[in-house]
Amino acid sequence: MTGLSKSVKARIETLGFSAYGIVDIAGINEEHGDGLLGYIKKNHHGTMAWMPQTAQRRSHPHNLWPQAKSALVLGMNYGPDSDPLISLLQKDKATISVYARNKDYHGLIKGRLKELAGLLARDTGEDVKVFVDTAPLMEKPLAAAAGLGWQGKHTNLVSRDYGSWLFLGVILSAAKLAPTPVQTGGCGTCRDCLDICPTDAFPTPYQIDARKCISYLTIEFKGKVELDLREKLGNRIYGCDDCLAVCPWNKFARTASEIKLQARPDLDAPDLAKLAALDDKQFRTLFAGSPIKRIGRDQFIRNVLYAIGNSNDASLMSSALAHTGDNNPVISNAAIWAVGRLQ
Image 1 (cartoon, rainbow, N blue to C red):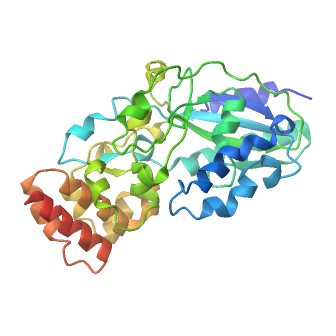
Image 2 (tube, rainbow, N blue to C red; image 1 turned 180 degrees about the vertical axis):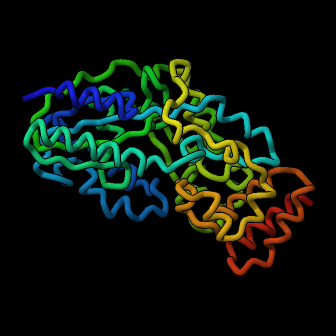
Image 3 (cartoon, rainbow, N blue to C red; image 1 turned 135 degrees about the vertical axis):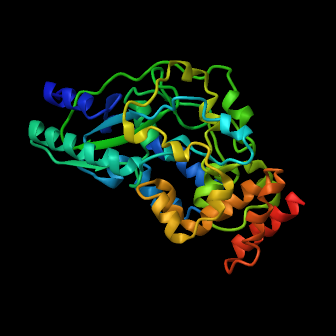
């Protein structure tokens, strides 16, 4: 069993990672995936068919790579420089989740993980594999086991040093690395993240029903959002930070130092009218390199129209009317609903 070399530790810091820890894969019990399986059994995954399809591989790192002996889990801080909920009060503006206000973190982190993985392979002489969110690996439980924090009542990772604002990446290694201690702490009796949720997406603490989660509804769900949920979206057009932003542990958080993770001025409360007018080419240009591009222009416009319908701003009526005859029935339905709300 070996620890990380000085060169790897130094490179972790210079590459912009804020925290790291190591998990002994052999110490992860078979109950590691029980929460996921229960989540799927309750249909809390909604239309995300990839979850049950990959559940078996996702339930334990050995199901993904049997040779893995250790997991090096890394966190990169993406803390905002101001309260991300302020824009919720600006009804003619859009609110975009903090993580999507600049570059897509997947590509940013993966490139840096690959460099670290190369150094680790050089030091240990063993194979490595790199993962950033897109593979069937349960990063949050691994991060908690590695000592980066704990899973809060909102199901996301909470860090003593960075609050709720850590992107996670994992390097699996066939080498036996010395594990780091689990971090003590927790949520206690606090319910702030549960109580602020506009759609009551948490049936109980530490469980989430994605079918009610605004992040799911605006990003993963492709159809017509249920009428009783639309007005609860407010002006959130991509993701939701409510449960993250109110966590008391954020008092220890700090602003992201990586410039590519700091908010672009044009994505910090942009005008709904301007967003509603985007054609496909303009949408792709505006969101080049952004995770928002992945949902496509049509779903994006659907979300913008829901926000317009919730704005109570008559000056946005023309923006909604412009889409009532759209060939996409999801867009035309959203536009007609928005017109009705504004009237």
